[in-house]
Amino acid sequence: MTHDDDDDHWIGLALSGARPRAVAALYRYFRDLDLAEEAFQDACLRALTSWRKNGPPRDPAAWLILVGRNAGIDGTRRRARFTPLPDEDKISDTEDAETSLAEQLDDSHYRDDILRLLFVCAHPELPATQQIALALRIVSGLTVRQIARAFLVSEAAMEQRITRAKARIAQSGAEFDAPDAVERAQRLGVVMAMVYLVFNEGYSTASENIEGRNTFAHEAIRLGRLLLGLFPAEPELMGLAALLLLQQSREPARFTADGTIILMDDQDRTLWDRDMIAEGLALLDKAIRHRRPGPFQIQAAIAALHARAARPEDTDWVEIEALYRALEHMQPSPVVTLNRAVAVSKVEGPQAALDLVEPLAPALGNYFYFHGVRGGLLMDLGRDAEARAAFDIAISRATTAAEAVHIRAKLDKLRAAAPS
Amino acid sequence: MLYAILCYNDEAAVGAWSKDYDDKVMADLMAVQKPLVEAGKMGPVARLLPTTAATTVRKGAGEPVVLDGPFAETKEQFLGFYVLDAENLDEAIAVVRDLAEANPGMGSYEIRPVGTFFPGAVKT
Image (tube, rainbow over all chains, first blue to last red; front, side, top):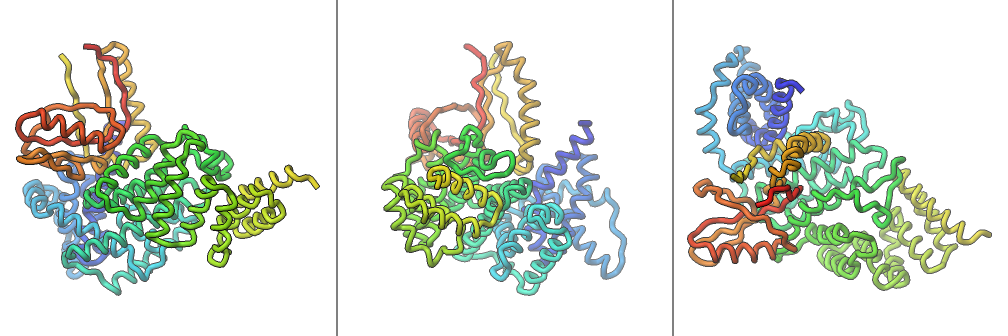
């Protein structure tokens, strides 16, 4: 790498790191997502020339906000009156202005700006996929092309999806006054749910789509850390970040070379990412000290018990069952009960688990995992014919090829056990 | 003379590194460290987890206060550090409380989990 390449690479990373803060502040100035993005793009172009020449500024985000705001105002004027852009040197000479701006933009401003930007992306009238695409585009700064590839759709379709989402937001508007404490907490809750959506989009995506999977997970973790930097004392946020890190730590072990999913019991645990586990456990430790449990913290605690077990047989299923029970109490859902049933099967055996699973049929009849778990329990109980029937339904409900392959392996096992 | 070398950088930019790029940087840094370790000149090396994983214990007039997040004041100077192998954050905080009590005056302690750690080869 030459020095110039190195510089440009560094500038690119600094721009990307500063983006959420800069775009969020520009959105407050211009009150329009497109204008804010354009102003940020302008500022980035100017940064490339100025930072190459003068070195990066002390506070890249403050520099970008100031230059972006000027560029945006110029752009608005230019459209109105066709006045030419001021020349680069005048705009690059911003050292003094930068200092005063950085003083004005204290952390509380940044916090509400970024929260607002994420909150409009999580607009309740937008379907989940649009929320995710918008957050990746506007907050994370991924290109439409990168997002399209992650979702496995065409660039044109993704462009349209994002344009539509932006129009919807422009139409309903956003609240630009500083939120009070209650409103802030509500926004944070909505935004945390969206960050989890971003992550899940990756976690549940097709095994073949490695790039997409990692894009979603990586960006969700970045958003989680970003929020945590703004709300350092929020235990549920620590829980969310811990949950994402602990789940993602298993990624290197989740699939075979040909893309078949590997269940946790069969994963090579030496492949789990130790740094992510360490960070996840550290955040969970911090969260627990607050003694204000919430659904993300509980799920993170469950993931942590898996992460701490060197071998599957070391897993503390009694504790996991208790945690699922707490989660069920806090956030009742048939899927949580199904997960608890898996823990129950390890603690009390398959019959107790099946008793818990059977009543879930009306709610989860279309759910692949329900039939897979039910089939597995029936198989453990030696009720092979019923197990086979359950696995057959599971295959028909599978949403990815890997899921179907996994169930077929179970059917093969049944067939091998009882050749008739 | 033993020297402590403290590394500072823009966390948001480093956090934007891809896994591949991060691995490459770590390999480049290892190449610099390896001969120094072999010569017995390089002591412990620690890469700290992000500041979001930090907890700060501040010693004031009364009981020390435990705060989430990194040490953020600019009035104090960095005077020393410990590397502690603790079971969990609670144990680390308990040790810090003892240290704070034994140490006269005010001051803060940032407890930051260590990600990558190499013990190094310096003997004293």
